[in-house]
Image 1 (cartoon, rainbow, N blue to C red):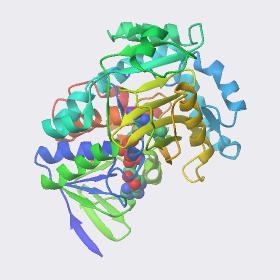
Image 2 (spheres, rainbow, N blue to C red):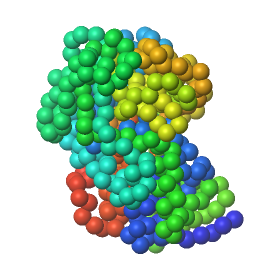
Image 3 (tube, protein in one colour):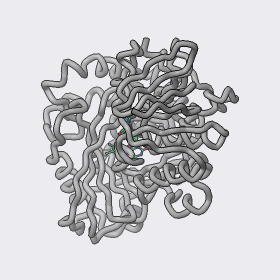
Length: 416
Ligand SMILES: Cc1cc2nc3c(=O)[nH]c(=O)nc-3n(C[C@H](O)[C@H](O)[C@H](O)COP(=O)(O)OP(=O)(O)OC[C@H]3O[C@@H](n4cnc5c(N)ncnc54)[C@H](O)[C@@H]3O)c2cc1C
């Protein structure tokens, strides 16, 4: 049994944990990151790789609620809730409905933009110039719609973009056909968001954060944290499957699994897994130059270094239910409909757990009433974007430095 002491322990080697760890390590704090999986072994492995400084539109919106019953009727539609899990998810779903009210949406959007607006500069700061050039493409993203008429949330989305000065250039169907030869005529209009970008490999981007942490003197420890125990006189003991590790500061960055460590301490947060899927097409024949999000069918395609990634869907079924690969297969059908020339014979299916809060904001900063315990999770649909700026914010709060942005909207206390 190992008994070890570290300056700080970060639990979870996803994008949120490794960003926090690297910022701390660079500030002179010796960090150990604990995770039974290698870096990017969780949800950070298989996301769509969109890095979007423009992220300011929460998932819960007034118009969204009207769509939900229709989606729920279709077991392979963009949203499904497994009936047996519904009672457990209900409190979170009710908070999600509350968060979708217009007065809340604008305040949430301000906090989303304040954090996510820094994503590309934080990725650059963390990776350094050469890995950044290798992994990140600040080329813009395109959103597209099928059919005519505005979507239910078009007005509020426009209002949010104007509020934050986000540039969005309208694209006609002819523009789209020029940009993306072979795109279906069902796709009738689009928006180019030139301020956004993507990574050609979420896994390699996050793994590089782990490599840098090791090079700069930090540690990666393959253990599972089982319990957090406050120590007499201050600091924390992390009881893992094979060791007892102590530190003055412990950061919980265990994504969708974070309640497992916090519930026993009486720290209540509204966190639910929104399971999502990807289908990775290895020899796709069609490769758009930049990511396309199809807003009508709620899926997206991202050109990655090893093929075309088709990602999307939300499934509320908890952490333990087996994946339903039919949901990933539907994504391939959607992609083939958008690009009829697409081939997809060599495919990998994947399921991951978005760590989601009802208000689309992560949970960052001190776990109030538990000195030395800090939180860095809850990034939901936007963790590849929000992870690095969150790491910077949380590390600054631990170091007692000016946080740079107002941390109040992300505080765990908002759920009490
Ligand atoms: C289909 C899909 C598409 C997405 N697309 C995008 C996108 O385009 N852009 C974007 O910004 N975001 C996207 N996301 C969201 C993004 O992937 C997540 O928000 C992000 O990866 C969460 O990172 P994390 O570090 O919090 O969690 P994770 O990456 O899940 O890491 C948590 C880690 O904690 C570890 N852990 C859990 N319990 C313990 C324990 N007890 N002890 C030790 N370790 C533990 C796990 O093993 C895991 O490695 C997408 C998500 C999905 C599912």
